[in-house]
Image (cartoon, rainbow, N blue to C red; front, side):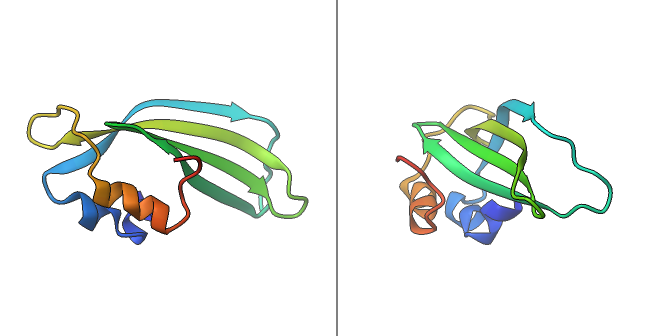
Amino acid sequence: MEHYASIGGVQAQGPDATWVIREHRIEYLLPAFENEEVEIRTWVENIRRVRSLRKYEFVRKSDGKVLVKGESDWVFVDVKTGRPLAIPIEVENIFKDTKGLKDL
């Protein structure tokens, strides 16, 4: 959510809509240990009519090894009804403009 807000997503979506998570998938590849620095990477893999897939990687900084891979399927909804809404072009453009979207 912090990434989305930092690139202007909250302003672009307006007050009557929001994102909710439909599903999470997490794959644990290697352990992390106390005092290790871990970098978290996130990007939008795709945007469809009412849904968007965001992916994540947790990378150990000392050796560049990926510790965790994950993804979340997000649905854009009306805050009053909870029904899915078409993702506005303004929101889609936020990801294009920040190069945060692959293969759109």
